[in-house]
Length: 417
Length: 97
Image (cartoon, rainbow over all chains, first blue to last red; front, side, top):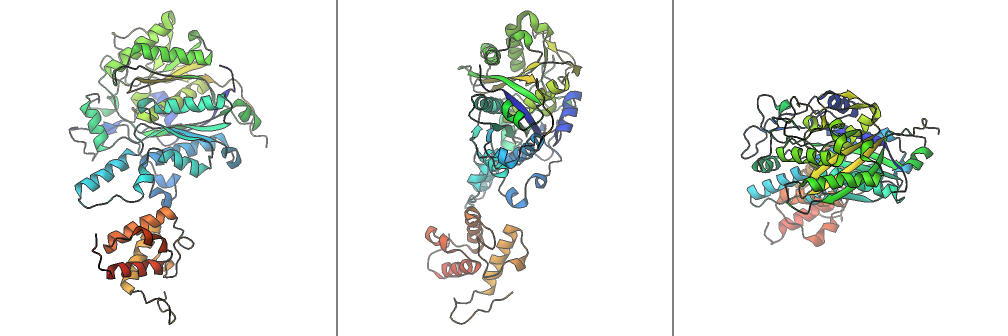
């Protein structure tokens, strides 16, 4: 589809792998998981909770104390990641003023909502504070980012479960491609490591048990895979039209080439291989990229039996004879399944892979499930100059999203101003 | 700190009410106590926006066990007005929440 070319000029993230991009890259490419036991978290029915929790996060580094008092954890993560991305982009306040914000989040400020309910229901007569609504509303993180950075363009929150951030990035891409914006801050944020959210996931019997070594709990595509490990954090990309990036002489980190979204229109939790396949196919068509041009897929790869089987089958079907040579990995083994933020963490990982010419492994993948179709499952970091990659996200609700990302094809010099 | 006011001004605010209100505001805004006087204006001097003011009134209701009617909220422009309002509400026959 013709229109403006859309490039990436800034990246930022907060996750269990650290609160800066360097830490994230180091651990993604060396496959060192950020999964640990969650001490002191009392999730009903879950005896030994684990998670990819953010550690070493200092909210005061990113927000003044006065704002923090009414800022949810998920919004704090969003602010930290966005601060990094915008700083990297070098956008000036006047350049930011026309920019929009698209935030993906499955749960929004669920920790604060949960805590308010707990207090009010367990202490009769206790009233919720007047700040509960503006703190805990689903779009509070997006609103904070607009106010904090002077981003006066369209400001949307996309709640699409585990595909939310991928949709946020994809929809921002479409807006830019159509020429309806110059600059967008797009990504996702999630803070779902709460007692009730964890307990509810546990009730679905999809959580990987802690075992002796929680860092090994999430094993996507493995013969011994045992489920998901929930993570948290935020990641943002600064996207802008190539013309805008060139106009200000900024370094381009990568390019968004295409995006597709569809729905299985079937079961609420059980994915459909055909829906997944057609979404990938749609994204390639949108990018006008042939399947043989794809050199890497950052899979949704949750580590559940069903997801990994159906996703691998969908990839094998779409890519045909090329599939056994197509590098595929899931970085969820290291940063966990950060729900609505996952797609953004994975898009960041994929842009870094394209930029740095190395592909991240699936950590903990020691023996590929022989029941999966033949793909080139990455078990170690691989140097590979890849031009085009897919980033997959599939959500409960049968909601699929796929991004086609490209290596920066055009780099301009440093700021000329 | 001055509490004395010229004759003809509003009735003197009880020290206890003022001290408690001042403590709430100072904690609320992370300010030293001496930065909050009876004459402090909530918006201009203490930089409380409309949402902050609602939250402050919530704190005051909890602290003093009073219920501030919606149509009285806009009167709370200064610390003195807040203290006067609390005392007036405490002296009314309306039962506390």
